[in-house]
Every structure is written in C-alpha cells, then in structure tokens.
Image 1 (cartoon, rainbow, N blue to C red):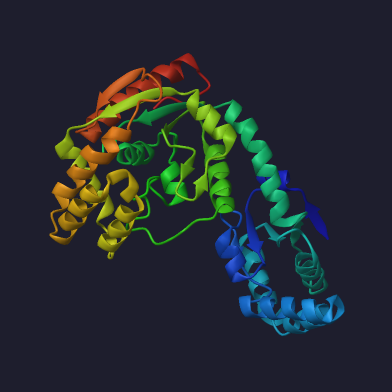
Image 2 (cartoon, helix red, strand yellow; image 1 turned 120 degrees about the horizontal axis):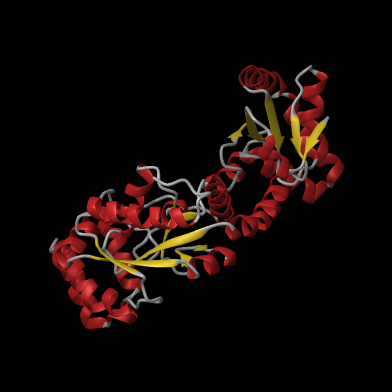
Length: 348
C-alpha cells in the first residue's frame, strides 16, 4: 500500500482526493477539492458507535465489516472510474485509521491501486496550520478599510475577476463579519473548513502582494488565524470613502437578495439592542415593518456603525469608491507600484 505525507499532496499532478468519511463529517470539513465516497452513511456510523460503546470494539468492528461488505461492488466501480480519469487516487479518513487502511487493502486485492494519506485529515490540518505561517512570510497585504457600505467586498470581487491576487475573507467565511453578517446567508462554515480554504487561497497566490479587507479577529463564528491577523495589521492600508447615498444602495443590494432577509434583520436588531438603546431599537423595528428600508439603513449607519468606525491604522492611500470601476483602476495602479518594487511578483 502506497502512503504519502500531507506535504507531498502538492507535488502530485492529475490527482483526485477521496474522503471516505460519512456525509456529515465531509460536510463539516474536508480537504478542498476532495469528493465524498462514504464507507458508512451517517446512520450506519451512529449505530456502529453505539455498538462500540455498549458491546465493545470487537462487535463494532464485525458490524463495520458487515456493512462495508455490502457496498464493495459499488465502491469498486466508483474507484475504477476514478482511475480512468486520474493518474493518482488518494484516499483519506479522519486520522488515517481503520477506515482508510482496510478500504485500501480491499481495493488493492481487487487490482485497484490507490494512495492512502498517512494520518488522514488530521495530519493535513496540522500541516496547513504550520505551513500557513511560512506562506505568510512571503506575502504583503494591501488592506482595504473604510466604513460599512463603502463597497470593500464589491471592490475585492472586481479585482479578483480581473486576475488580481485577492484574499476574500468574508467569502471564505460565508459571513460579512458583523452582527448582520448572516442576513440572507443560510450556510454556515466550520473553523476547520475556513482554515483549509484560506490555506489553499494563500498557496494559490502568485504574487508577493495581495488585497485583503480590514476584518476584525472574528468574522461571525470564524476566528482569523493569529499569523494572518498579524500580517494584515502590518499591511499597507487603503481607505475607501463613499457617499451615504451610495453606501445605503450598496447595503440594500448586498443584504436583500435572499428570501427571509427581513426576519434575519429583525433578529440582528435585537442582538444589538444594548448598543442601540430601547428607543432606537423601537424606531428601527418600525422602519423595518413599514418597509422603509433606505431610511432604516441610513438610521443604523448614523446611530450605530459610523460611531463604531475608527481608522485603526493611518491609511497610506484614500480613494473614492462611489464608482467601483474607477476605484479598481486606482487600486491596480497602486498594486503595480509595489510589484515594481518587488520584481518577482507579476504586474497586471
């Protein structure tokens, strides 16, 4: 059986990673790009765990073998198909234990040679957290800062679409980073999944400079890794400024796309009642109920968000973002200025 260490994954071309854990384990976190061919479904894994606790490891192992045996024909077909399309099929489970070991042995006995990731996902996670610090040593961040609604996320997406190196933390976290961050967003991401996506994003950068937003240490339920936070704080700060009218427009366009957003906003308002005060909360709720959305957004800006905003670092540049395309052009000029200072980065 051929085994590889986590760090060897990145030297192998034409590969596919196969996560054989249960669907719920895979959904919570997995190596980005991996597909899920579960050895056990969620209910089967739960039953095996119950048997293990009540009857011991021997009986649980027997049950596991029995359940897996009934799936082998289908698994053989799936893995043979993968072998036709990829030079290397890499199998992993949680910690490189019995699930991946036994499956690789059975596949090999059927003439299907695959590679096993030694230590499983746990080894991969240990590796990326260590290597992330090394990757960050070679990256300098151009940090977009500014008040709520100035369009920082929109500008980042514009730059990314034009091929600029961007680390979009809110996109990776599936959260906009405030108490209203989950408005209109139903999916939640785990810390492990965020860390994996962040690592792969950093690894994919082909420049010593990259754009990033000035986020706090927490984006919703996601905590930024300390090395990334420190590197961001050392970055080159660029403040975006925009008119109140445009900020209100940006917020409404961003937050009102999905069904049920009004209910999400109502819940968020109650979560900040101690900051708003009872009088302001009552006014905000009435504006929401009366569908005075523009008035509500402006009200929240003036009574809450703008008061909270403080420029944490004195920006080296200040740009108007009312026209995000012109703003993007100015940011590209700034980027290319720094790339010329560091020739190994690719100018745009």
